[in-house]
Image (cartoon, rainbow, N blue to C red; front, top):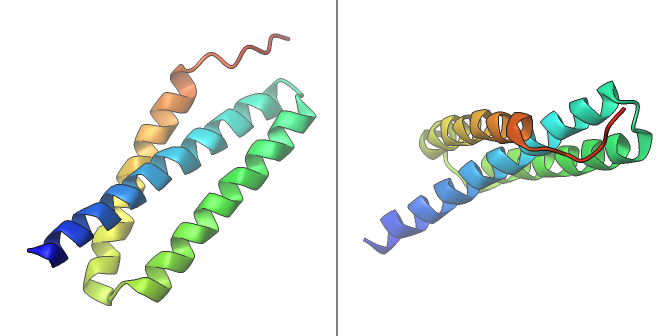
Amino acid sequence: MVFVVIMIIYFLIYFLAGVLQDFLVTLNWRFISKDKILPAVTFSFLATVVSFTVLYNIVTKLDPNKSIAAIVIYSFGVGVGTLLGMKIKHGFKK
């Protein structure tokens, strides 16, 4: 039972990391399209840190059976992050 709860927490963290990562990437692309250099660079850096941290954790901490589930859950979070990144108003106008 405890193992199941721990895995659910891990999967929730991967989902939220996916949301965060693609939220940052989507805002990065929006800043690039508006020629906002500093925010684009900042969001690019943050998105890369999140992406590689998740990849590292999936490769080193999970066995192959759980890794596939974690990747799918992370990918679902990425989709939600894109949706949120497109919906938010970032405050910069051209």
